[in-house]
Amino acid sequence: GQQVMQIPQYQHVQEGEDFTTYCNSSTTLSNIQWYKQRPGGHPVFLIQLVKSGEVKKQKRLTFQFGEAKKNSSLHITATQTTDVGTYFCAGPYTDSWGKFQFGAGTQVVVTP
Amino acid sequence: NAGVTQTPKFQVLKTGQSMTLQCAQDMNHNSMYWYRQDPGMGLRLIYYSASEGTTDKGEVPNGYNVSRLNKREFSLRLESAAPSQTSVYFCASTNPRGSPLHFGNGTRLTVT
Image (cartoon, rainbow over all chains, first blue to last red; front, side, top):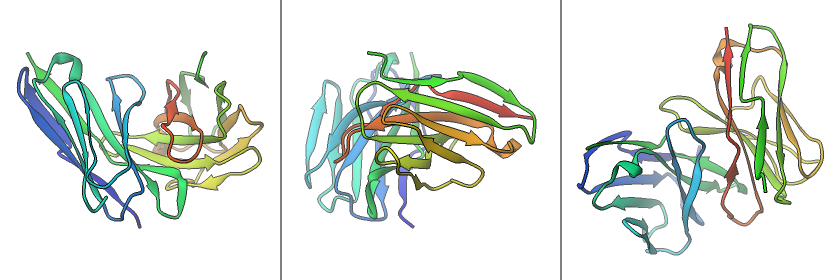
């Protein structure tokens, strides 16, 4: 069946460093969404990418959708302690555009 | 606006007991979802409702039933709880066509 995979599962980052997390789908996606979940909280929407090769920026966060619309990445520059949390990507099921499948997430720990 | 409201926030059940998790949204969204979150497994879709009166199974529907009572409310029932259903349950809502999901604060369920 359709799978959405994220790597790495865990990311330990020194404050001030950059890192990237990756999302790969087994099928072509019409769009991809990214969410952030703070420890003990609920997922909160960050951004949606729709077009092949699309790049969007939110301050220190850069999101990219692959040319084949099967992969995506989130790059964070100059990591801060406020970036702590788990980042999820989610894509719609190919057989039902209203349903979303989430990756397992990348848990980010920031060391001051 | 309250957004998506889930009750209860915490629950402890014994094996075999039943309970209903409640979810209500005040954003006039058509689509509603129930996800469960387990460590290292991300968010897995239990059930989905595209509109009032319709429901559809997700990845992990076994052991659960749902009711879309009206446009606002979507409940999840465990008829005979099992330890494998220990998890954090999130309700979410959205309007269709790839709009962001809005999540409730979650219900932390422990089955002993």
